[in-house]
Structures are given as structure tokens and as C-alpha cells.
Length: 211
Image (cartoon, rainbow, N blue to C red; front, top):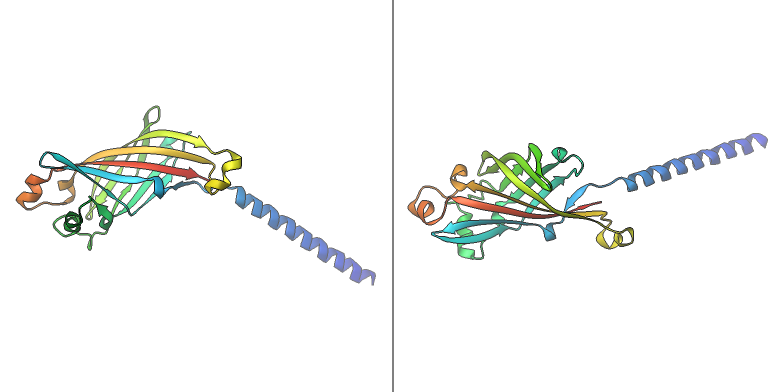
């Protein structure tokens, strides 16, 4: 009887230890930050290009942007973007369908354009430069993306549940300019080379949440 009671006590003690360890592990996992997550509802990828002398703007609506922002050591930050080219929108369906063809982006063969930073450097207060390859239609070229930190905002603890557990919000504006001819976009006929400008201005407005 005494031996059985002793075994029972050891068994219950073991269960208690397992339960405590499990609770501590669960709490530790829950408290670990999830990192920065792009808020796609408040993020835009826009571009502008001239038709003769008139700037025509557009955007891409289907994209993924992975951001690892380090405020204390910006050079340790990284950014990677994947854009579905078929999601191009210039406000004109006929033009957008033409842009998807082999005359321009050839989206059936090259569905994505990508950018991946290989370095980030701070050039001024709230000003960064992200360098890395931009790939369009299978052709890659090193570009520099000028980034401005528009601001950060800590979310009060009592409001975090309302924002899905977000602890901090950061907003960025990034820009660059490229020559579409470097990527083989829209070349080979007079309309592509004369009517439509070669220089493309790109602007990214990005909001990210840190959990």
C-alpha cells in the first residue's frame, strides 16, 4: 500500500513538472516577436512612364514584400519583393492586356519580377539605400532603392488586440528609376521605342507591422 502510494505521488509529481515545463514553453513562444509583416492593404507599388510627353501612371496589385528592418543597425536590414507582373493596372484594359504580351512583359513566360537587397546602408537621418538585383523577364541588373523612413508608431498595449497583436507600425517610401530597355521590355518596333519613354520611375509606399 505504501509503495503504491509512493508511486502515485511520483507519477503526479512528474505530471506536474511536465505541465509546468509545457506552460513555460508556451509562454516563451507566445512572447517571441513575429517580426515585421507587410500590411498589403496599405502598401502600393506604383510606376510612371511617358507616352510622348505625358506621364502615364500604373501599379501592380499582386505582390509579396519580406522586410527585416533593424532600427538600431540599419545595415542589417533586408528587403525582398516578388511581384506578379500580370497584376499590372494602368486604368486601361486594352493597354494592360497588351503589356502582358510578348511585345512587353511576356507574363506567360516571365510571371514574376523580383528584387532582393544584398546590402543596406544609412546615408542620412531616416534615409537608407538598399542595393541589389532587380530581375525582369529573366534579366537582372543591380539597382539602388532610395528609402525614406516616414515614421514609426508604438501601439499602446490596450489597443494591440484591435490591431491583431501589432506592437509597432513603420511606414516607408522607396523610389528608383530604371531603363526598361535594360530588361528587354517593349523593344523592337518604332511604337515601343519612340512613343513610349524608356525611363520608368518606380515608387513603393509600404506599411509594416511588428508583432
